[in-house]
Amino acid sequence: MEQEKIIAYAVEEGFAAAAVVDTNNIVFDPMFRPYCEENLCGQYNANYSCPPACGSPDAMKQKILSHRKALVLQTIWEIADYSDNQAIKQAKKEHNAAEIRLVKRLRAEGCDGFIVGASGCALCSPCAQTLGQPCKFPEYQYSCMSAYCIFVKKLADACGMEYSCGQGLLAFFGMYVYE
Image 1 (cartoon, helix red, strand yellow):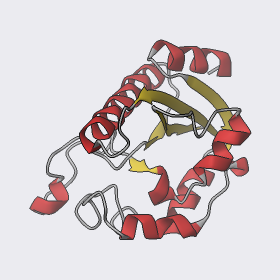
Image 2 (image 1 turned 90 degrees about the horizontal axis):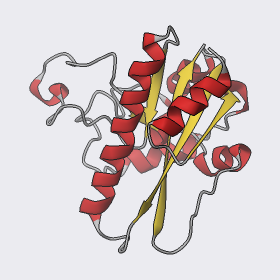
Image 3 (image 1 turned 90 degrees about the vertical axis):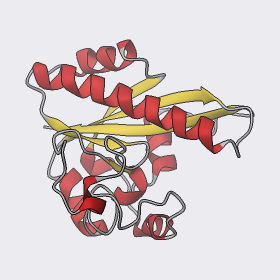
Image 4 (image 1 turned 180 degrees about the vertical axis):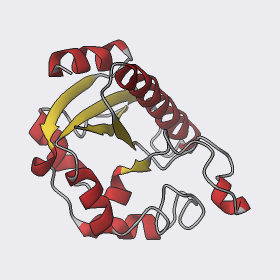
């Protein structure tokens, strides 16, 4: 599928910016995994898409590198108060919902791949892992950038996207990894 068409679909789904990169140009750094282990989001060992269930940093890196391309996606949100967890959670939810809408369009045209979300998967609440059941939506399940140990600031810079958007604005990033 042509890069221009993929990017156009991303813009139509509401992303502020989108760019295609070669996966071998993505910078990985296992120093990001401890952010997951701090469990500030409450999903560590409670969600199939989060550590440790999602896989080791090296396994996650290899999952991405087994594909050639990644569509990097950015949304920008007005957030009056950076401590407003509800507003941030809602923005992440909307970002990830836009990724799923985009994935459905891309897959319908034969562009198979997987999502890297702006947060851990929140398709089910609670995650089926906590109930000892298999994932209900494995085709849409997504892990976050930290679980993959992606250096998001360097990725944003490489794509010409703002990482820090200024006072009152917050950017979220995700990817669709394909080919």
